[in-house]
Image (cartoon, rainbow, N blue to C red):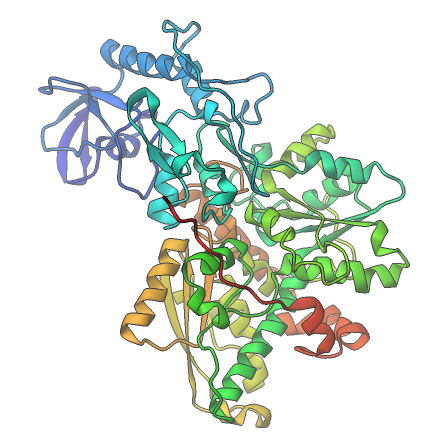
Length: 593
């Protein structure tokens, strides 16, 4: 620890931390624009400058470490004037349309300008043209609103290891975007939306489906159903002032009914179904390898995260045979809604619209993949992010805080706690192990509260072992086998794990990969701003939802049993294979000339 003084207050600070961190821990707020938690500070925007006694120039607090005896001032006239100048310069070349911008209520640049008391802009500058790039299904870029903070570059390169966008040229001519000013659909972008999640302005946003959904709801000839992903219930409340991690499941259901959806369902139902199909697929691979001596692709990787799938198609096509053939829960739901459900209620699937509420912008891309039409139609028609649902509720004039709790509709509204934890990093793996262990041994997974502790938390790569003992006759060949599993969240961690396996030959049987840091609770479509503290709060809420369930194992869901008896017949069967499974192919990355 070192002794420092901030604004006249003596403080203790951990040696080596930055002034920004020390000030935050001491209760002082310093504004930032380029700073991104967990990444190397850039000191690029200069909004966080402070005055340090003995320093000739103002210091960027995000990149300056504390030293013993340092005397820091965060609010002198010199500091305030410097911050105002920086922000005014940004505003002078910012092509903002604050009256109609989707970020007008949560724009960090606008908030900072207001907090600094900026009422007039002293500088005049040439603004970039608003040449909007909406070439991809999920994301839209408006360079005119870019303040060149480089947060998007940092998360795309350092966290996700994708590198779809970068800083080009110098000075005023600097441009943030794909190389050679290419459109986004011509580069290896996985549509994860983490860039949109960290962008402080409206420069990168999701492509909205709100008006298309309203049009479907307002059409009396259409039967419009909605599914909600598990991560939504722990984050939607933030759009209405609730603390991160507040569960609003019942209010969300009520709001969706008041918006006008004909049926409100839960993606959790098909998350349970995914566990049955994916677990059966893993057991079949193990049987083929251990009993029949076949060459099979192991480890098996999960397939429910579309950004991860596209990343593998671009950067690791060699492991595509290892990825589970199961569609994601979103796409399984769409296929069943327009077949099984349509038949049950007597609705022509041509007259049905399936809407998804997802924490993930890549789900917009996934819904439009050409292979996602096994119902004979596009299985999922529109995808809304958590943020978009929050906007729709406000557009409808619904007082969310005063809504009563309601339950989802049957049959696709019934699910287990295992499906809830799909939202968290490690959750899909834990849910799968609960069912696989029970199928193989006939007993409940011997874990504290059914939670496999090594798979929880925000460590980038996590591993665990589960030994299968006292197996039932059908699975006797697995007697004594120790299943080794791994979990990675954030695509950079996934790539590191893949390379580690290649280099060391380390053996795993099953690997979960989530595109976004923290899993779906940290998705690119969740309410901003998602820090690790916010991730932990949402994760804890999802575990509480799971622990409060009467049924906590996917195979215990009675409606899963019913859908197999009435329609699918058996896991990995002919109808399941047609509706619930798919394959993926290598994508070519762009050659930069």
